[in-house]
Length: 161
Image (cartoon, rainbow, N blue to C red; front, side, top):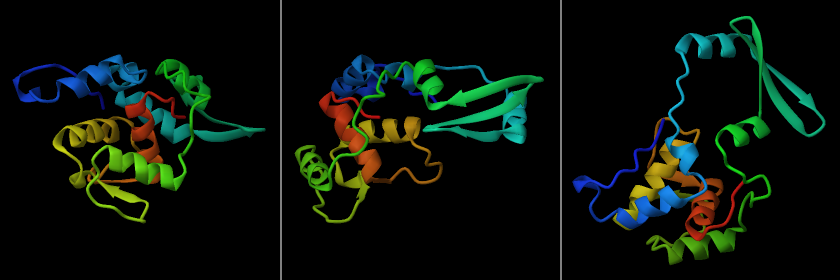
């Protein structure tokens, strides 16, 4: 899934967030439109094997009789993320304080957050990030503390791993 970050009439009021995402280090990851054929995807997942060597985990598969290896490092390189040294997860109190500064309207001690309790512009930003980067495939209305950490880091210019 790619994000379309264009300033048009329907995007009125969201220019700041669009500018932010265009200038962000994740811009390429959000907007790259790679052509991957369904047959290649099926071949990959039908033949994949998880390989571990020390701290490195790789997916290895055969696609068109060629060995394909995917690792976290390869994904970072292809998506031009340059975030290996970034924050992994913020402490809970920092998450709650940062979300409150972002206008999150539902103080909570739970580590599940809801898009509905943000201002419209933040809802757009959160939806774009969740839709583009999250493994979630069904509900885009709530997100975890890990995704909250990613959103906070992105909105404050910090690298998130």
